[in-house]
Length: 170
Image (tube, rainbow, N blue to C red; front, side, top):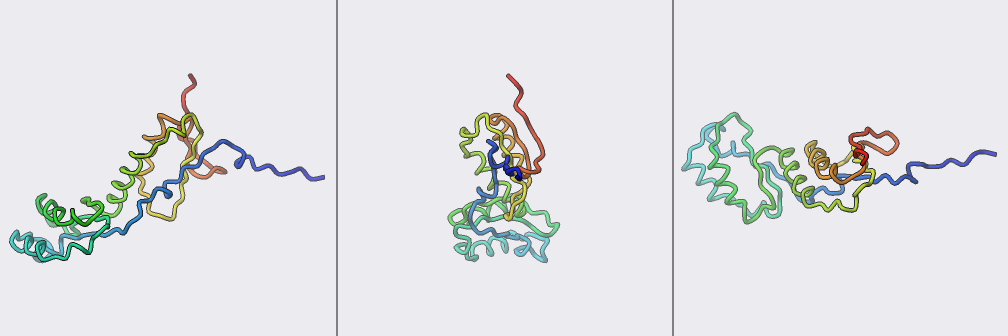
């Protein structure tokens, strides 16, 4: 008679936390200021302001925007600020940087608002693989949020996890 196979992972109290479940829904867009610079490098204030004034900003309604300059141009802070004043009525979020910077900002906001009280003194595993662009910073933000609350933290999958933190014995 064969022994019954017991799935200890399924029976454990281990709680899986998947950052992908908190991925902020919405379209992302990179707004490249170099397209409004003379030859991609020189900001001429009058021309720049004219571009901003005549641009169709409504196309960014409910989008997450990363403001960047893809060239090595030195872009003054006021240029980013001016563009953001036009985006403000339409975009959900505007940041300076690339898409990873944008995702980091979005996740930071989501994680800061999380209620993790249900995880008090629980063993938690942070799922590692995802199909959505979860930035590395999001994992750090999550550690900061969970560590003071949980019994233990691991990373990966239940069958092959990496221990990260264990609450000191009281």
